[in-house]
Amino acid sequence: MKTKIENCKLHENVIDESFNMALYRLYFLFGTNWGQSSDELKIRQLEKHWTSLLDQGDTSALLKIWTEEYVVNNPNGKIVGPKEIIALMKNGHKFPAVERLIEKITFNQDIAIVMGKELQQPENKSPNHNEWIPRRFTNVWIKTKDGWQLAARQSSQIISP
Image (tube, rainbow, N blue to C red; front, side):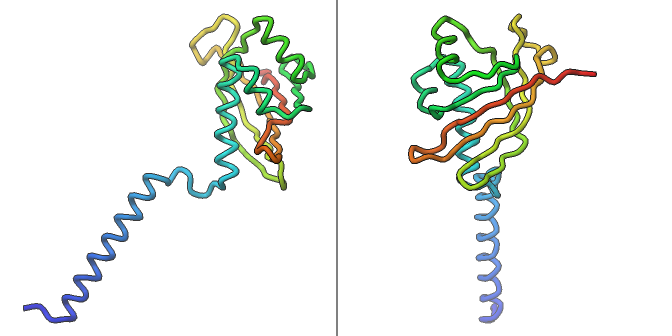
């Protein structure tokens, strides 16, 4: 027959194991997001979202996600804004597929600066990623009354020495 102390210790062990199992489950459910603020998660979502809008050619949605003063210094060295980009898209231009790797998101008050590298599919539409064009990018997001909006973008091709 077990004593009251042994029963209490057994009960404590069961509680500890249940608590540890609950933490373990939470880690696997949400572990990838630990340490990220809700703003950082939102920016990461928006980065994927606006890229998909560009792929779909959804000019109406892009105009909502961009600020009115949105400006791009594109890989060709040309500075363009929404008017030029939308006109290009309405004339049938399809932007090449891009895969983006965010390396750093820095917040400064209501500004988020996203930096990283991206691969752009070449004109021949090669699925071979070894042929894709490596670039560096910077995207600048501003938190407005309507939420986060993309204000500026810069992208430059990496030239191998």
